[in-house]
Image 1 (tube, helix red, strand yellow):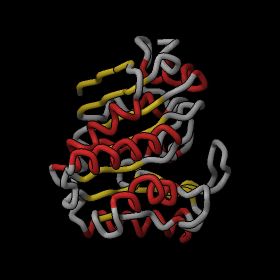
Image 2 (image 1 turned 180 degrees about the vertical axis):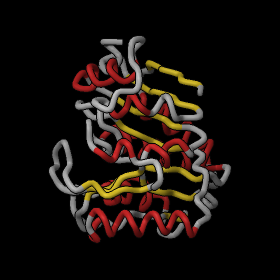
Image 3 (image 1 turned 120 degrees about the horizontal axis):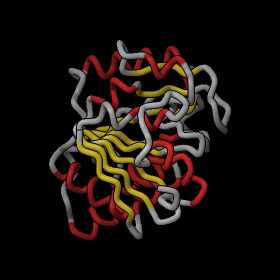
Length: 232
């Protein structure tokens, strides 16, 4: 396990550079939701268009989803569609979305099967955010889903943070299958959670789900701005 905590001026731009390198090699990339990832996706599209990078062999997956229709403003897929997929061009890359509209458990079963049918790919890059409560993907503090190891995808019947809608989420086992995991965090509201997850005294703690990732990740990069890193 290699963990690198990097404090940079623009975490979204730094993430976009990693995405370009992975996608241009035809890699499997797992997307996440959130405002900083949205900015990273926009930076990625700009870089692809400005430099003329070919990303047509890339495959995009999702690490979690809210159980809402794909055109709902709370949908992670809709955010990625607007900021990444549509600007790249319809059909330009292979995309596997989680069907949140099926509900948490049927949706999780379907995505689990989709992964199995694809040969359970090893993801080249998996993006994660961190909530102010320390959650990541849709793995919330002290929930039973944190102990699931036999599945790649689980249904989350009750979210621990707004929006309070059921979710579908990768498990820690799925996260562990990625070659490179990248956390993105910006702003002072994330500082306490970042310190609890990645500070010098941090260790795996079910009360801080993000803190459990370093012990399972093959390579982990944490991209922070100065405000998110203020309590490290």
